[in-house]
Length: 188
Image (tube, rainbow, N blue to C red; front, side, top):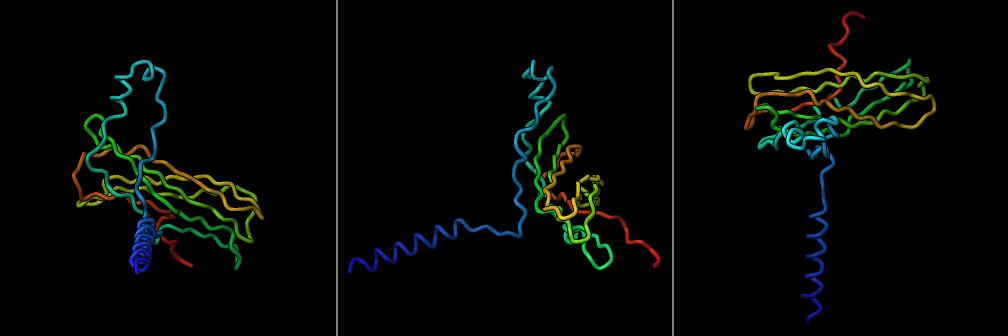
């Protein structure tokens, strides 16, 4: 008699634990990028100045998202794949520095060489854009150089944009990341 309620409680506890451990693979987790790198020797000598340079924690930090349709870039050589690169994660950290919202955005991805890969370095065009209710507030197109090896394995890459400084806000802002090759080529 007592084994049925005990078994039922055990099953309920196991189900609750498994559901608590679930995460969705399609969402981008926005976590802290970790502690900032050490500043100059002068800042290390004066802790008050170092704390001021790092700013204070922002009350609002916009979500970082990989813009739909910009997470993958592929290059072909004829019918064979040269390489494919994928952005897999975007993170951000926000501080208030000198009255401005300073946003640091990190992008992580992988580049996989294909059958047609050649030994060389490719430049991946990564855009970081901050968009508000009135349009684009900040946009930066950077090139990340990644070595490709014929017959090689995939390589991880990272890009950090730490130049974003905008007026503090309490919402209505989002940070987009993704590959940006520019407008499609005209003609044929």
